[in-house]
Image (cartoon, rainbow, N blue to C red; front, top):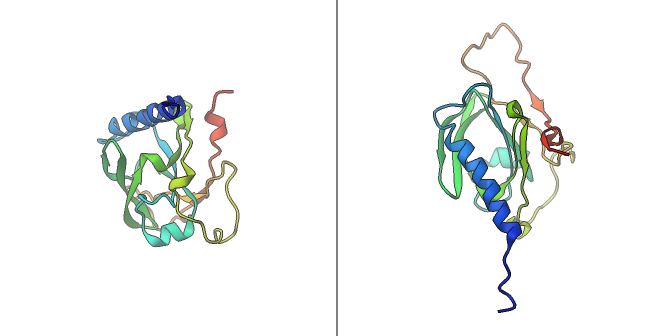
Length: 171
């Protein structure tokens, strides 16, 4: 019976992931008001299913943004799926909640950091293409392009963006 220890740390992590799950569930039909989500996840988690070219670009962590351009958001107790546009190509992402390391809603000045179980990640071979990570440890991401009001005569100024989640943490 000495091994039967209550894992409060795991209980708290599961409860906090429930906040993310409920926020996503409330956003299936679209995000209300100015809400938008930054979700950082470990790409090497064995149950993460993303295209190989995205995993090659973000071998450790990736941050996605759910704001204006996302489709087919599906949520279960263990994972969520969403379709995002990457350089005008729609891709379906399967992300288990266990792989998520951070969640933020900048419009509400709300953010969460999660512990991830390192034992569930695949071994890492090599680094990313330039060996650099963003300030929060996540690699920068390319935002989904807005197809709704595109004007091809104007250059697309959206590109890689680094978000420091420290701004959303209470000190």
